[in-house]
Length: 153
Image (cartoon, rainbow, N blue to C red; front, top):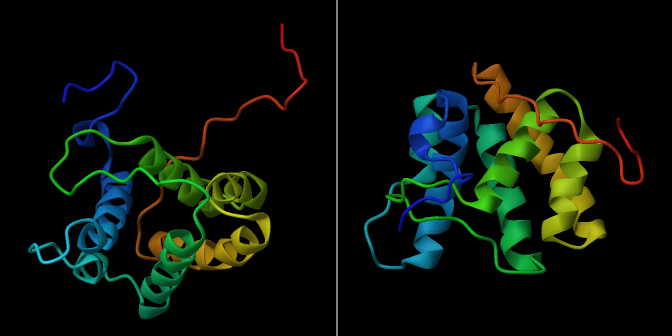
């Protein structure tokens, strides 16, 4: 599959984003390819010395996502060089939380799951984002977009 011009590849990601996408893919891999040898997402977390609270927070956030998703979530296989749309949303989520922007983060989560569940998932996502930052990895903040109905000229 050839990447679209606007579709980033793993090669374009910094180590912080690469870690996040790698953990996401490794968490999802056993669900998508049961019985196949897949990397253990917890081992990836341990590589950066992520604390056990951060590991649990990610697991709980992902459990909520997989159990309450409004639509299929696009996560690529571990070997895919392209970064999918929902993987980019995950980067946006963690980047927003690392700068304290819970509104942006909740927007991402509500795009995946019902608001009530998203509010719970936000707590776990924040725990993961904080733990990743404490381990020394900081994602770039999301690109700011104008509010709906606002015109810039």
